[in-house]
Length: 232
Image (tube, rainbow, N blue to C red):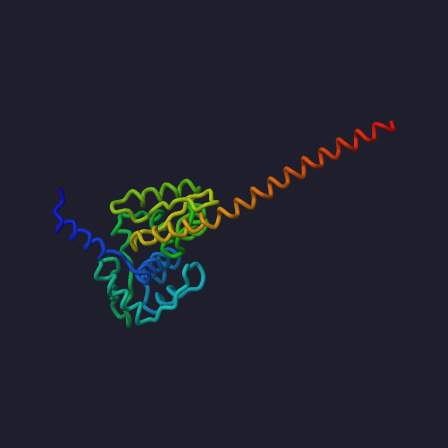
């Protein structure tokens, strides 16, 4: 049996490893640009800030100052998720991520995690469509295999969310910020369920009305046919 003090210490340690939204964005941009623009990697502070504030392929879109990105980088260096590179003769420091080493990720798994960090909750199909330049997945099944690998890690870095009402595909979320995103998803799903019920009631009423009208048309048709036979 785990002693209360030990359990509290382990929880505190896990909480310290959680990443805030700015840390998520900085790490994801480093991983993205490593694949997309290898000639400009590692990244300078200025280039990294521009990547964080990019308008495309980002959800949510952010506006982060260079000073904030610098502070975030220092925190990530302390967490050993980023390395600062000082190249001989270079005027500025550059930075590279260490996610591949931190979580033992091959490029396909890193691509999946990066897309989830940059774009939020998505289906496997959406991840495949959006990760082509990071890694070319042949099938959605390949993405699902990578997602399962990330889910099975200890602690897991990705979670499979419950299907939202009216949807057919499971959605996935990164867990580097903790499980609050799952709580938000459950609230959203609960809300969707409450607003879906009246809609289903309306559909049921319309279907019943159509059935009643169809029955009335059939009855009138029979009466007309009977009336017409009197003159045949």
